[in-house]
Length: 131
Image 1 (cartoon, rainbow, N blue to C red):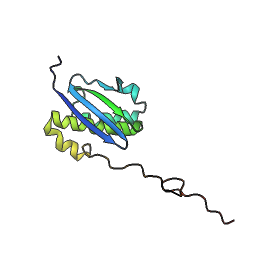
Image 2: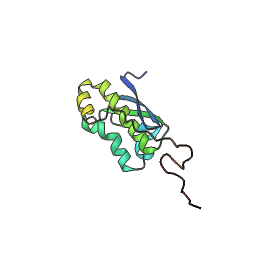
Image 3: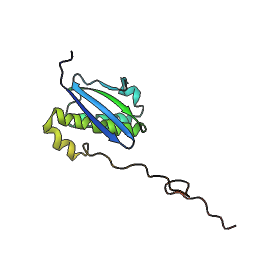
Image 4: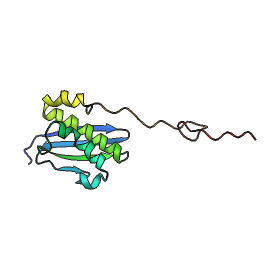
């Protein structure tokens, strides 16, 4: 049985939900069973994920296993960052102020605006014709 202490948290952004398992290790990050470099194609998404770990100087301290559902890739990266930051606070409570100051513990409240009836989208309207 695995003797390492595991911290399990949930991170959210837009429609994406990330369940994060943080345990002591060498810095391996697995997302839905594959390495995060293969899962997240864009470099910006990879940078977003590593931000909480870089700020707390714990890139090679912990292994992260995450299950992510819903949303697009950028939303999933934001959800994973949120979950990792929450797990780091559980693992090292003294990092809370640092993570809070950088905005990693705050859930991003921005969501997609709903489409309105009689319109083409949330804000866009059908073209008006005189005749």
